[in-house]
Image 1 (cartoon, rainbow, N blue to C red):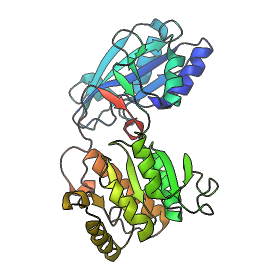
Image 2 (image 1 turned 180 degrees about the vertical axis):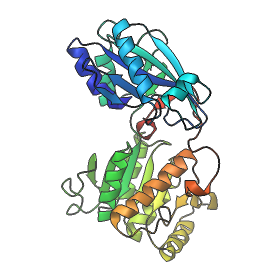
Image 3 (image 1 turned 180 degrees about the horizontal axis):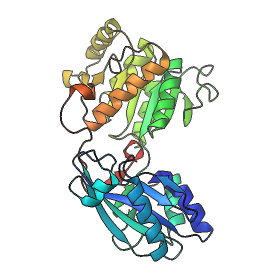
Image 4 (image 1 turned 90 degrees about the horizontal axis):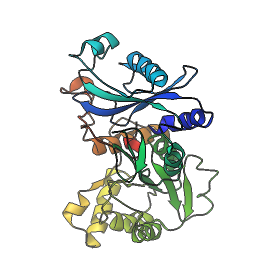
Length: 328
C-alpha cells in the first residue's frame, strides 16, 4: 500500500475523491500479499496493483464505482468465482479486496498515516469501519527492515542498490574513510565510517538490530570479517552472509571456533554468500545474494520453479504487516 500513499494524499489535499482497493485476505497461490493496494483517482488514473495483472480490470471498475457512491464494498476473486473467471485469475488462488472512497470526510487522518510511514514509525490502519489510524488495525506499517553491508567495495555498491529495491533501509559501513563515501554508494541510505564490529555492537546495544535485519559481510579481510562475524552470529538477526572462497570460509570457521562460537552458531553463517547462479560481475553477485535472502525469508528452495511442484506463491492469511520487503 505504500506505493499509493503519495497519490492518495495529493488527491485528498486537492479535495478530489479517490477509490482505494486493499487486499485484506489471500489464500492458496494468490499473486499478491495482504496490504497490496490499487487507487484510482478522479481522472481515472490507476496506481498500484492488487493481483499482478490477474484481476486488475475488475478491481479498477470497483474503485471507480465506490469513488462515486461512497459505499464500501468487499469482493472475493478466485478460480471458483464467476466474477474472478471473467476477470481472469488463472493463478489458482483467492484474494479478498475491500474497496472504499478516500476523501477528507472518510479518511481524515490520511496525512497522519503518510507522515508516520515516511518517518519510519510503526502505525496501523483499520478498515473494518471506514479508515481509522492507530496502534492496531487491519494493516500494520512497520519501519523498513535494515540491511547492513560491511565493506566499501564494488560488490557492496551493487548489494546496496538491490537492497533498496527490495525495501530495506541500507547502511554501508567500512573503517576506511577514503572508500566509505556517499558518492561511491548512492544506493545506500547511510554510509558509516567505523570498524564494522564496533558499529554493529553499538547498533545492537541501542536496540536497532532485530530479527528482520540482514547482515552482508563483504570486507573479505580477516581483521574485519572475524570480529564482525563473531558478534553477528550471536545476534538474533534474520540473515548473516559472508563473501569469500570455500578456502576462505574454512579459515574463517577455524578462527571463529577459536573465538568460542558453537556449531549451531556457525551453522547460521551463509558462506560463500549467495545462491549458485554462476555470477561473475558485482551486479550478478548482488542478485545471487538477494535471491538467497529472499529464499530464506520466504521459505523458498532456491530451485527453478519449472523443476518444482506445489504453489508458486506461499499462503498468506487474512492479516498483514507491511514492513519493507513484505510490503506489496
